[in-house]
Image 1 (cartoon, rainbow, N blue to C red):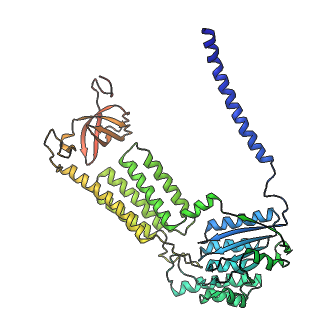
Image 2 (image 1 turned 180 degrees about the vertical axis):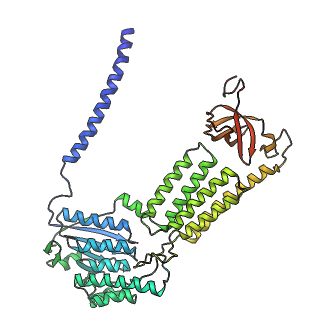
Image 3 (image 1 turned 135 degrees about the vertical axis):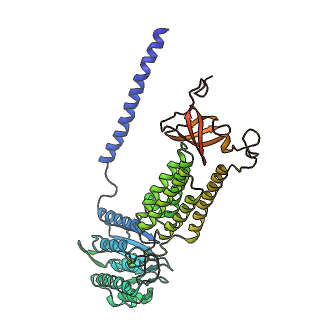
Length: 482
C-alpha cells in the first residue's frame, strides 16, 4: 500500500509536466499553422469589388480604416473600392491624410455619398473630390467647407483668411488632379457653397448620380480610370461585392473618441484615484481609475485637445489628494471640483488662436451639462469631506462626549480616540486602514515604518479623519493571539 501511494505521488508531477508540454506544443502548432496557412486576403480576385462604409466625424480612426481598405483591395487585386460616405465634417489633418491615401491609391476608388439625405459636408467635400470616381445619390448634398475654429465658433478675419486660403489651395489642387471644376469646389471653401446632387453634377463636381450600389456598378462598367499604377478598365458585370467593416477595436476607439466620453473617462479615472486614496488597500477603485485614465488619454490622441485642459484635470487630482492628506476643511476639495470643470471647459478649446484648421470639426467641446454633472458630483464629495473634517475637529458630532465617548449617531468623537486600540486591516506603509470599534479609519504609522495587516495599534493623535498610530507591543499585539 505504501508503495502504491508513493508511486501515485511520483506520477502526478510527471503527468502535470507532460500536460503542460502538450498544451504548449498545441498552441505552438496552431501558431505555425497560422504562419504557413494561405492568407485569405492574398490572391488575384479580378471579379471582386470592396465596399466600405464611413459615417460621422472624420478622425484619425477613419484614416486607419480607409488605409486598411485600400491596402486590402490592392492585395486582393480588386476591381474597385467603394467608400459609402455620410459625414458632417472632420479634422483637417485627418482629411489631408485621407486625400493623400486616395490620390496615391493603386486601386480605383469611388466615393459614393449615400444613402438619400446623406451629406459630404466640410471634410467630406475634400474626400469626395479626391476619389477617382465621385458619385452621389439623389437627395444628398455636398459642400460648405468654410474654415471655422476647432470649437465650431467664428474666428478672426486674419486667421480666417489664412485658413481659408490653405483650404482653397488644397481643394483646387485636388480638382485639377481629378479633372473636376476647381472654381465650383473652391466656392465650397470661400463662400460655404453647398450643392445638391443634381447641382453638383451640372457643376462638374461629381461624375454621376446613382440610386444605389448596383446602379453605380452598372454606370461604371467599362469606364477607364487612371491611378498611380496605370489605367484600369472596369469590368463590373457580375462582380462580387464584399463588405469591409471597421474592426471591433476601431469601433471602440471611435466610440471613446468623443469629447464628452473622453472627459468622463478622465473624470472617472480621477475620482477612482481619489477613492483609492480615501480607502487605501481597496485596490478596485485605483485599478478602475488607472484604466479610465488610460482610455481617456487614448481618446485624446484622436481628438484636438488642449494641454491646458489636461493640466487642470491633473491639478484637480493633486488638490483632491492634498485635501485628503492635509485636511483642508474642504477648500482644496472645492478647488479640485472647480479645476475639473475648468479643465473640461478648456480641454478641447483653442483660446490662443494657434490651432485654427479647416475644415470644421463639428461640436468639439464637452457638453455643458456633462461639466455641470461631473463638477456637481465632485463638489458634493468635497462638501461631505469638509463636513466630516469640521465635525471631527470641532467635536460637535451629535451627542459627542456622551456614552463612553461616542455620539448618538454611533460615531466616535476625536477626543475619545486617543489611547484606543484597533487592528490594521490594510497594511500601513506607512498609510493604510485601521479598524477601530465598528468604524474604519485612514491611519498612518507615527514612525513612518510599515505595520503589517492584523497588527494591533494604539491611537496617538487625530488629525481630521486621519489617525496617527503606533504598534501595540502588548501581549495581544497580533489579532487572534490572546
